[in-house]
Length: 223
Image (cartoon, rainbow, N blue to C red; front, top):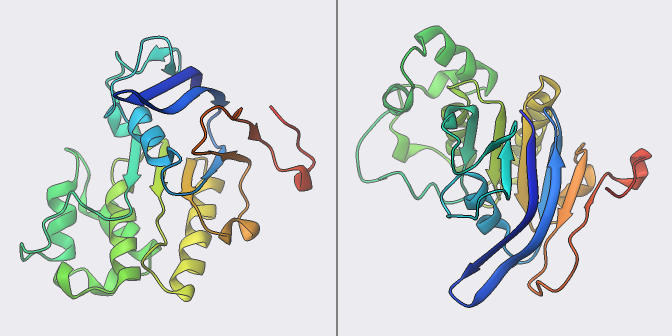
């Protein structure tokens, strides 16, 4: 699925956060979005996911305007804080995945994903007993249940240790090699070792021109 952004501008009241941003991603691309806190990274993701209202003719998915787009199961989303989950509610990993599954997702698919994430052995554990790394893997599995075409990750390694970060990035790269488009948000220096195809740097000063680049070290060029 192609993503086409055409002169996207977004403001909270009178404060412009994104100003005239344009780029195109094709299926299987790997975009890293970096920038300091407050530069508009998460705001952009909310625009892409239809959470923020945007003007018509600014975001398209395979030529369908975001305001008319209905096939949201094509997206998988892993947030930084998992703020859509009630941690006080006692639930096991398997129970969480069962209630998160779209209709038609069978048990074999869930078990396969758990095994791929190397958390097959914790499927009956309470979600509240997991480490940060384990929890991150569970929510990746949840995001992958619908076999998405695009996986969006919002600062996914913020609360996990070095070993789990390495495993996480290896997992993301493998998913990308399988043809899934990756959009990864970060403000860290970890991107030096990532095998991304495009990078977007966002700034608090929205007068700056945005440039989506193919890394020069890979023989790329500025789009």
